[in-house]
Image (cartoon, rainbow, N blue to C red; front, side):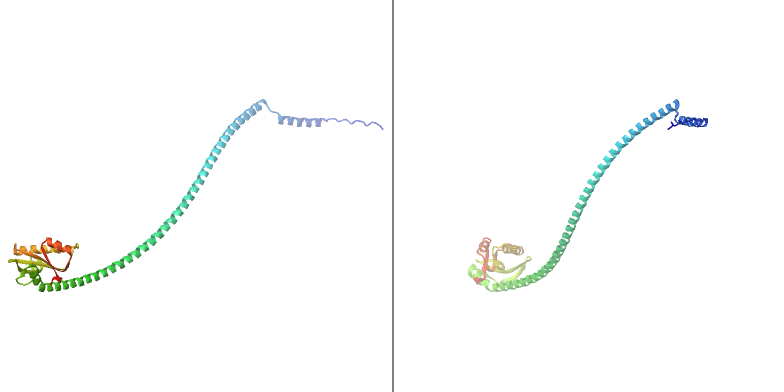
Length: 269
């Protein structure tokens, strides 16, 4: 076999020119002058400063953001507490309203009871008025009956007193007993009489019963007032004080004796 013959490559002038153009173009693309480099360095330095400043500002903003978030969290917590308090207040308000409603209901029941009591009071007052009228009529009837009994007792005493006074006390009636008004006082028994040969006047009162019970009208005091009225009219005449009754207690008889009053009881005639 024969040896292969090496083939040679030859750059033509045209190809050479094209290659030079391409290389020149590439060199122009990557070529930087010294001034351009210095300018670029300054720009980079300025950018570094700006980036550092920006970083500081970003950090400050981040810190401010953290503080803001903390404040927001604190506000959120405060808001939660406020809402809890509001809920507690709302619950307390509901309980208060329930109590107020219960009190209002109790007040309504109380008013109903008061109205019922007022109505009962009105009925009671009306019944009391009716009873008062009945009592007044009863008192009038009793007063009339008492007066009738008193007059009947006095009329009976008029017949028997002269004999009793003469027999028991030695007093002689010169005329007869009469009812009289002297010095503005009504005298149940009034008469001129003789006692131990002396002229006297008898001033007497009639009472159905005489005892020590404290009453508005004391019969002894009442009799003394009538004696005083007679003396104002007749002068300082001698007067025998007389009380006539159906019954007198022992205590009253002792009291009458101290006042020098003659007491005659109906059983004595």
